[in-house]
Length: 184
Image (cartoon, rainbow, N blue to C red; front, side, top):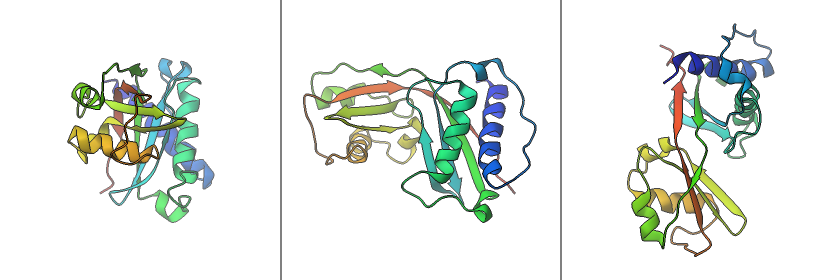
């Protein structure tokens, strides 16, 4: 894993959020990958609880821009949470996930699809009837059984846990992830 890229991404995410509060930016290390298209998710944890998570499933803009925009979106525009407050910022821990391109899974039915999922490795995108949901590979930590993981993913996409249709499309991707060190 490229730790220098991780440090560059984490600092950019933290600076992007901090700039909204008028915080002085920390010096950001450069990395050649930052100019290339990249897809990131930025996850914010506050006191050990999810506080925001927004990202890109496809690389369509420079990695530098993607991580900054997703950091601001996770902090201030995640519809599940109120915007991050200044007093929460110092206690917020940033995690950046860099996604590989998604690959479509081919399966005959739901049981076949479940057999193909790789716990703790795969991020999964579910698409059907104009709806879409994704879980990063980190979600396996809380939902380790494929059936449970998939049921929750269907609910995230707006379906019932027992929903199935021959129109379901599934894609998998992997991530490299970096976490900001915990403050002691």
